Amino acid sequence: MATYSDEGVVLRTMRLGEADRIVTLATPEHGKVRAVAKGIRKTKSRLSGRLEPLTHVSMMCWRGRELDVVSQVEAIEHFKAIRGDLERVPVAMTMLEVVDHVALERHPMPEMFRMLVGALRTLEERLSPALLGSFLWKLLVLEGVGPSIDQCAGCGSKGELVAFDAGEGGFLCRSCRRGQAVGAETVSLIQQVLSGGLRSALDQPPSRATAEAERLAMLATEYHLDRRVRSAHRGAEISTAGWQGWSSTSSSDTAHDVRAPGTGAEEEAGAGLPPLAS
Image (cartoon, rainbow, N blue to C red; front, side):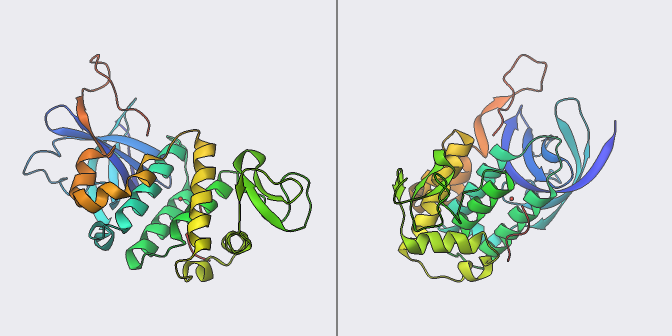
């Protein structure tokens, strides 16, 4: 059986049988990887604690036909500050969920991986109000569906942009306006993020512009994915259940056990860009 080595960020996990777990990771060289961590749920497993969601790892896997098998893994970063902050957890889990939906299996994604790790490192250092929105806007650009920010997406006018419509592909002038009304400060912030001024954008204090930029980014992301990003709408649960409550009830570890492919049981269902720096 062929083996390979790579880095990875654990996006989510799913129980498999009595003691195993299916782990979904974002990797730079092998794209999205789904691999079995054998015996990981046993008390004395050497893999235990190293393959939890939101962990950056170095790993070696055996390649399988449908699911790979983790043979070795070492944790690089646990992002403990994120895990210990109920405000940062939803931001991180939203990033992981979006990457899970966007990434393709077996397709290298070095830029997306670098962006994800860069965003998580930034979040580990501080909770910038512009971070999640910036991550999503840059992800959309990497996917080739970034917004028109320098001219009206409807008529091409270079005039003032006052509205946003995901279906139109970006911001709209007064003559073409439809969708969501947008303030000038919000347009300026998003232009800054996508035009090389990310570092300055991340230093901005909370404001209507940072909140609106994040809301529009999520709107555009969900339009592109054609699905709801569940993690983005579950912040209230974190405040009461905490990280453990999130981990035990979210899609990171589904409540249903599954068997290995070919046994007739249901298999796991599918579900960052240059570094997040200027």
